[in-house]
Length: 334
Image 1: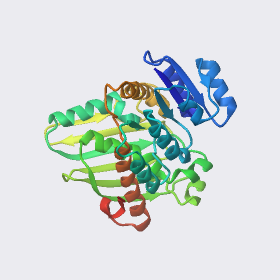
Image 2 (image 1 turned 30 degrees about the vertical axis):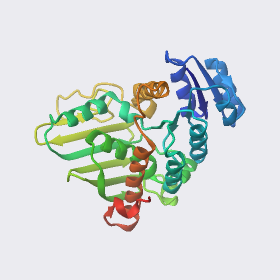
Image 3 (image 1 turned 90 degrees about the vertical axis):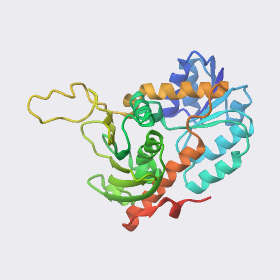
Image 4 (image 1 turned 135 degrees about the vertical axis):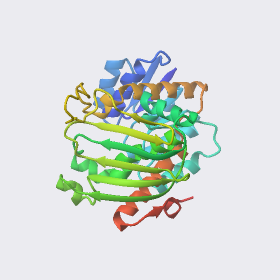
């Protein structure tokens, strides 16, 4: 098949490399507002360069990967759907939830699949955790703990445009909690602190946060996030049931140091970047998209899924600012 790529920054170039290595992908058509980025991708992967998104859609592509700036997501997703071309879009659907709802309404009723990029759904550990929960082997759940710790804060310009740590970082935890447990969040309580990087505080954001999510069956989920984790990029999950407890991320590259006498775990070089931690998941995610394009599977992460994680982020942001519990119904738009 022939796949278009819109946006060739860090993640777009990474996706181009991944797609070029998939057996199902015969050719790429790439476009970026910066001509040098498109030219570099074309030279590296033998891709055709198009001078606009419209030109990509006119080039006979079977599917399109949107890795452009967030502000462009609504227009590009809608344009692909209107052209009848399946589309993969990196999260978020849009910068604001209002815009995201508008995208959902714009594509409603059209038989064109849209896949949103939440890569943890394709990580082998999280996949195994979901299977364990759905099989019932853990028994009734009572506690879930989800952690995402960045090795260092993003640049000030990124923070200013990110929408805040809950919308940018924690939203991955929110999505994977829904996916692994199969439950919905009904209420949140969030707290935050600023432990470094003054520009994060100046942007009205927190760099270290904790949130307690109440799921619709009474299970409690505890989410921990920070922009400061000197040992590396740390993504983990614990799922505790009345019959068993399991964990994702307890492997030799875990960026955590034990001080117990005689303990040598973890023994590997710690993960230091999200692309390192989730390289295989990104490949599996794009492989799944080729199956979506081929019509052999439905979208594994829909716009509706992405918006649900977004509502949790909205509720946590409000809770942080107002120091109180917030229900999802309080923030949800229809």
